[in-house]
Length: 293
Length: 293
Image (tube, rainbow over the protein chains, first blue to last red):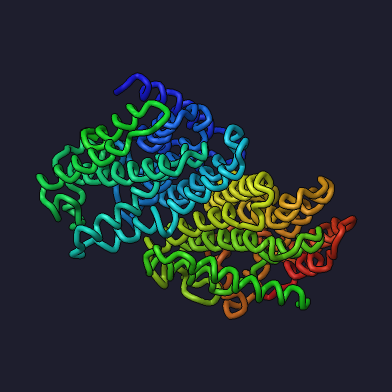
């Protein structure tokens, strides 16, 4: 891991912690459930994409703290809800009991709900971004759209509808582009929105985010087949047990690996013409398909 | 019902419908569940408070359409989640099967999640408000805070924790101030935020909203004891069946009625010094404790 990425990660954990404990008015159990899931570790892929895209555009990381927290908070809420008994019914997440196992189902639902609200509070609150309120509003709109019915929540609905169904490769890609791709894309483009970057650079980050998002998901499916529970922090081969369509089940393992590598190359091919350093973006694209968890 | 209120209601249903069908990209079943709950009727108390406070301040109703939709969409999402088996486990809402009964539990959770995201998309999107982006950001912050861990979601957590517990009157009030009061208050103050009203008027609307919100909840508890399922569209005496602390169970029916009437008077006492017409606000305060459903 490059030193720069390590530094972003360290600072991010501090900022996130501050955002999570700032409200004394929240009931203790609910606040504990929110922190439990948000601070359980995780790869922090989305905040890292925010900071890396910021570096490529010359946007300083401390002006992106709010956005980075918001996208990770939204991601955390979606994991809590996806793990619920009525959804994927998972007991293990990031090597720990899932939120509804560690607390209870009602608390997990409310922790997810409150985290989503907190993300938008953070996005509307950030004083550093407030220098450009119109851009800030544009970003809120983009993030709300990415996590709503046409994005993340809609993708999860398609995912659940796909169980035991014979869906094809384009349908699988559409589902993942909504479920995980939309939030990853907006993480990569957020610094472009906030700095009102040239539209060519915005488009490159958008395509980069799209390819990285899909490659990340293909690699997730590959890890589900080849990885151990100890590595991934999730139950092994949970997809197959659930008869869930995946890239390996549709394309085979070898072709899935090749598809992920192709997408990673396509993502890196977008990294030209930026005023700043794109090495962290290149590293993240490679990391998406090389990580072991 | 005053003609003005009838006109607001009619226009509101049209605007809300447009906001709900605007996304073709959402999976059909999920979009249907969102519409099912949002268009099931309901009193539309929160949007009416937005329009009535706007009238008192001289803010035209069409510039408040987005806020009115957003607060009702948030209210709808909270009802869907509160009705879930892990929460209040209700089968009936507004005289119809609850969302998870009409669809399924996973779809209901996701419909709630997507509605919350939609509310913030609408709040960040509204072109009429965009003339004052800083005020718009302030409003988003206020609404996000009102529905998060220190507001609506936190209040629901306290509500669930209160089952079978001996809580006292102040604790019951605190819970309701968070669970329903916070969103009602911000509905009343939203037009003041958007028009950057004098702080005295903001404070009056804030106190008005606080009193109306609490009176509304006391009356809800009274209706649960005295109303029929046919009247309320909800199962009768559900609170007692669940051993849930209510105003009548703590104060008795007579004292609960007196408390609601006192709060209604306190709310109306705030309605002075406004540049516009406060009669709709006065009517809504009375309606909160006189309605039969």
